[in-house]
Image (cartoon, rainbow, N blue to C red):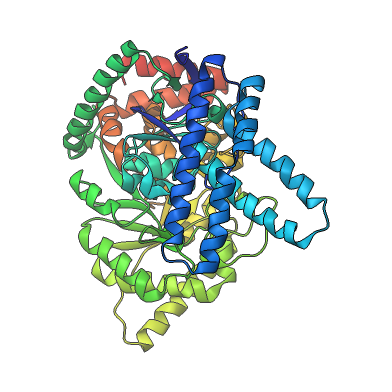
Length: 580
């Protein structure tokens, strides 16, 4: 019986489409359980035999350079894997119970281990650890040979995982995978932001997909329709292959479009900057003809380096070289955000040995830095020194109180004095900005604007804090609404205050790169955006098709009506009218 074509719904990132083969990524081994058909039994037997052979090959490879004692132990492992009694029991239960073979094997071996653990015998206890080792190896090879080993992931894979970290995304990007299907999370998680910046097709909230499809099966991600097609038909594959080719040509055209100026129909030029997460993205930025960076997230320097998760903090000198390299390549502004560790970004190098109940509301970003002055000083010194080689500006995240702004500015001035004593060059007039992403900062914007040289709005956190909903919680996706009336009112007041005080203001959150919100942001008064490189062309095309007056009328209707359903409705009508 052929596998059944199935469509699952999720939340796609962007408008991309991908076709590939399923690859389960299980950094922490979790044995799947699912029903099989009678026609699948022979295939399950074959999978088991292949996994046993694969496991034996791995063990023999380990024996190559081992001493005799270890060789003898590994010989026992091979004999256990070749145990005909276990093999017969596993295959009979698969046939009788019609469950996948790794679940059956796990259940049987776990039963043996439970019996051994109840016997008070040291030799048998030691043998238990051998059985656990063998069980883990065989199940991992059943789920996916080399699962958890990035280097063995096929290039055309669509990676399926319960969650992905930013460092996972980086490693898979280096391999060249086609897409990600992630069971939980959302489009504003940092893994999603990275995937989008690399142009990897990604969809979230596909519940329990690992129990619904096998490894190595054809699968399609369609972010335009927010669906995953498992076991697609030939017609599906043919149609989506054409669509993938069309999207590829569109992206090639986008590089040309991104190089053009973003000017509205009524001749107002809008400045578009790029967000980057790693220094290597600077090359893509130059390819797209973008001459300024509106947000460089420095925390990834603290999380991984040279494709490895780091265990030591980056020194002042390492950071200086990175910041200098970026600044010397970019002609325009280079806004660098200071360390924003916390929430969904954790660095092993920090060695934090406590767990917070509410990490998004916890000891993170500027709160963490002002409590760790040595760490913060290294970063500020590196940023100041690099400012001598380009137009670097420093942005402070997660400001909640005015005192945090004044204390940070004083700290930076003290670091300047230290650099002068060391005879180090830096830009004396470097600009210090504040990232508005908490309701308290928005509420005291009239005070903050007097202390800041520029302002940026971090829409991801601002929306989640305004609406008190975790932006990575799939159950709250309906509540995370960037055009909620509370958010619109707050944005309007922040933007007006900045403009009235002649302070530059940019919106650099994910909202900036979502084309359906572009008219809203223009209508609110934003004249400078910063976004993922891959969003720039499409946002510029929207800007060219609207006038500021039209966008202001749209926003005024939303603000006057005070009804979220109405706001969504007239925004959709606006987009249809202007074909954007």
